[in-house]
Length: 104
Image 1 (tube, helix red, strand yellow):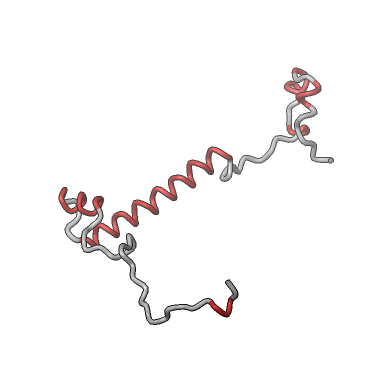
Image 2 (cartoon, helix red, strand yellow; image 1 turned 90 degrees about the vertical axis):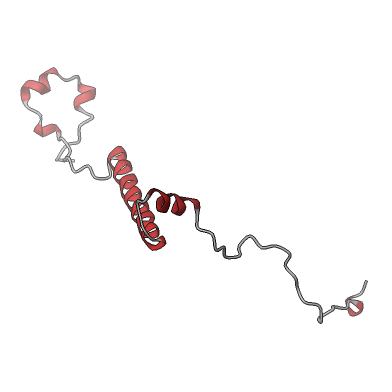
């Protein structure tokens, strides 16, 4: 069909039969649980508590990952020259050479 013959019905209105993104008057289940148990008294308090818990768990996750992967490790490296001669005598050469040198 050539484009000149295409006709649009501009008078028709678009109808949405169902939208799952419509606002709901019902409270979320977690807020209902907080209100029911008496931990909070209002919906606003429940939202603030949940926001605070989210921030706390995020900080905890950063702390755990940081310690696991050494993000916060501030231990200075051990240099070859810092190893005492008694300990140097007991180390195999491949272990001793694995330490960084200050002169390099």
